[in-house]
Amino acid sequence: MKVIYKLGDDISTDHIYPGRYMATVLPTETPQYAFSDLQDLNTILNEGDKSQTRIIVAGSNFGTGSSREQAVSTLVGHNLLIVARNFARIFFQNSINLGLKTIICPTIEANVGDNLDFFDNKIVNSTSGKEFPIIPIPEARKAIVEAGGLISYTRKLVLERQK
Image (cartoon, rainbow, N blue to C red):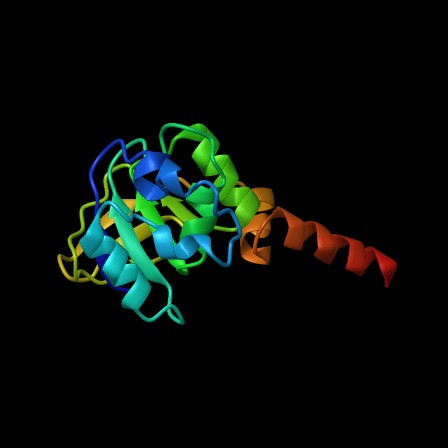
């Protein structure tokens, strides 16, 4: 998968989903405002192919700031995988609850256009040839993300128990 954008450290929820759009909270409407203050990234997201998972690489403390869920749901709407050195705690939990694909990779080195290959315990940057260990999330949390979030996961469990 190809890296479409690279961000630095301390990307806040206000960078991701600016507060002036908080009147728009429907997950079907919020994606158009993702990173609206970073016009080049906003354009890439809104005009790009959402049928394929796209990768954004970030530094430390991604999702810092407020606990607004819209910062996560706006990214889910773009079919993104966020690879960061680490995530702000509340943002990370919201990511699991809403089904946003995230990977913690403390030593990641990647640039726009690099191809990344993902394995259970590492990322391989096939462009540079370097490997980077990841911090896996627990299997229970992984199952929630793979189901599309906590609501979808719970629905799946309820339906399975009714059989």
